[in-house]
Image (cartoon, rainbow, N blue to C red; front, side, top):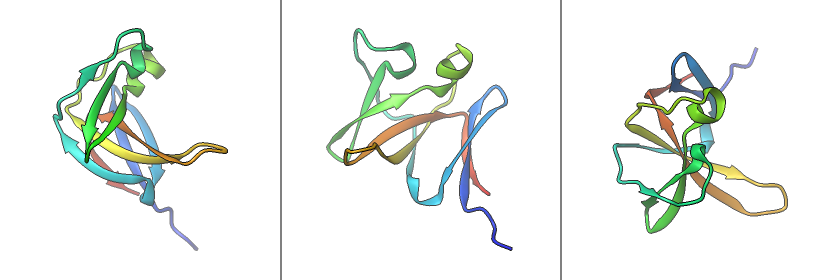
Length: 99
């Protein structure tokens, strides 16, 4: 029997998400973020990580319409269809747990 290899992300307010082991790149505590005008509420900020501008996603706003109070950011890798790999940051309420 195989076991799952994922990270359980705590988004706050009893919301959770899971991502694959290889997609979680790094956890950062309270990085500087910068507001971007005229962007959706759930992706209003960016941060700089290793000389790259990375969009910050507040999935709590997207899923529940309430801003996250978390201070942790998960840098995650993703692959868009017909495009190259990208990076994003997800606001976390607590450190991820391996499942």
